[in-house]
Image 1 (cartoon, rainbow, N blue to C red):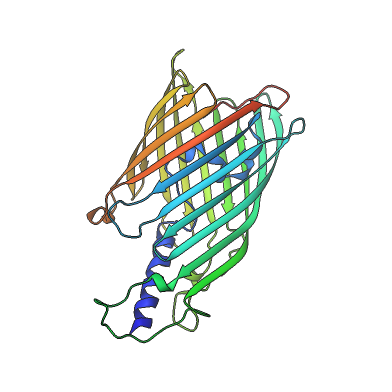
Image 2: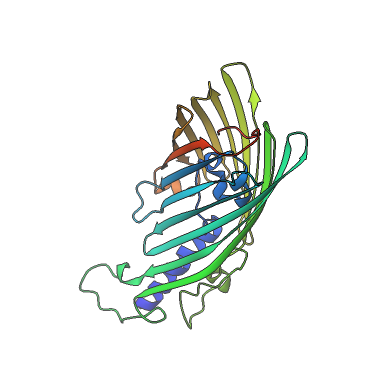
Length: 316
């Protein structure tokens, strides 16, 4: 009996991540840490920067997803290339995902201020399940047969991972595409049971991002952007965002995520060095009957300019 419950719980967890395209970390404030979506962005600025995100998803649901991200990236001092890396930790109940990646990007000018960057992430993806933390039965007196996942109560799988991306940009618009989890490694959390094999494999994820910055006057800019997220077997998801920036110091905006949420975002840029952003997602999917919204905070630090030459990127 316990084995049936266990298989059902793990299958549901894997299917939920698959249907929501959440095998990869997801953040509402993607436009402020877009490097983790596309490694080609790693060499497009003239300075190094460090950014961290924390996301607490679906208030009110026990063991709901909690995700932490830390990234750092910047350019070579004189050559048209950039380096960086990021780590993430995502915990959903008994399932813990951890990733660590390094990146390389090469940047070249096409014409005028139009530039093209190409990049790659290489790293590892760790998938862990703590079976001992899963509660079965209605009370402590329930008698259920023991069960093992692979070699015990804790499953741990470490696999290599890679991402490729290209990014086209100017001082006013940008567009990029990236492909994640290229190796498609198996994670195989349950042995010798009838579990859909597509739920036991890291699926390739494809991201397309684009946006435009329009200068209204000396004080105000408006920047609409869009993010498409797709993977085999899951519906295409789209984030549509628009934010208004006042004197490049304060910003506020709205995001609509198809079949998921409407989000409010706001932020502050201190002395063109420290960014603080917050967002709150109002859930509109069927899960709203059981859960509240989602809170997210971002902190970024920009270091002094080190790149020689004139930049075509602005702080976003």
